[in-house]
Image (tube, rainbow, N blue to C red):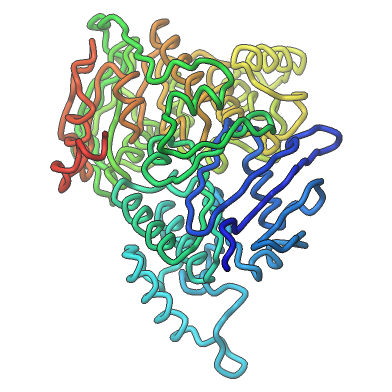
Length: 509
């Protein structure tokens, strides 16, 4: 007889330098089950998965795979036993093709040479079967982040894993690509493949998961069938207190003072064209659009990080500005938080103090550095942002995703800014950290800072933004007044999606 439980973890504990990160965790995974694992940043989710995947080999407790006690030496050892892991961070080799990445370490050879033609053909058949819009012969470096995520999924499927760990697999995917992923997951379940699914998007967990396990501060809070719980209860389990879900931030309509005016802005060698809008003082302007709509490009063009066609106009605080470079934008009191904090927002191997001091040092007039003043400023920002850290000397890569995002925000808020551009600021962070960012944005707006808030999350656009511009194929297709919550989520969704208006309400329910 086949065992119901493919995986059993009993009394798992793990510590780093005497600090306990997992304490007596029990976890099971059934055959053909999607088991969601959720928790705030630092809850221990990734550590638990790295034990399963053979990355961490020193721990206490027992792990059983198909009834057999195991302790993997490394990820290769785990892969040989049918365990595959799709990491949130893209572990691909950019100078190789899609096919070469998928076959990396297990290449098909003809004699002493790799048979690239055969590998490419086989990978293309797999991609077509999965309905992924990716070419097997393309170099990974030429693919956007969303398609690189699909390559990782295809690679794990190609390895014929019987247990797949998916860590934030939809964080970079569009709605249609998420639909494809869910379809693939259902097919894998039908084949008896078991999936551990980690995500901060609780709505999608309830669409795909059979059971939900919640961790908090390295401890097991509980496991429940997905059909016997709801988002509100899961959030309460995650944060340890009653959490106000979908809190609405309603501010007074601002005065007529215009902070930013953009006219006829088009992307150089890109799809964004003839963008024109205004942002008032103390206003949060949402920019909504699916992946590839041009939403990120608009933010980067305003900030001078992406080339614009001649003929555009940008006025900041009534002053005409070229915004030909980020340095020029910063000198005008503009700030930009990129959707990719690890490569465009932080120096991961530098200290927290160095990261926070980046913008203040760039804006100061004198060449002299007052280290004592910088240390005080960084400590003050850490307190203001409720940053969790041991010392300002620790490196940024030692922090959780939510705390890393707070460091990115700190480097900007340590100086005077009048316009803040936030591009997917809550991507890949937990519910508690998301709420802190919402509160911060609301406070800044009430004090007069203007904010451009770029996102594809309907809930945060609806609950936080005063007006919402909808971008579709590089153009503004709607300017929606959301003061006093005049916009409905279904209406916003319909504006964002071109060919699926009829499905909008079903997907929102």
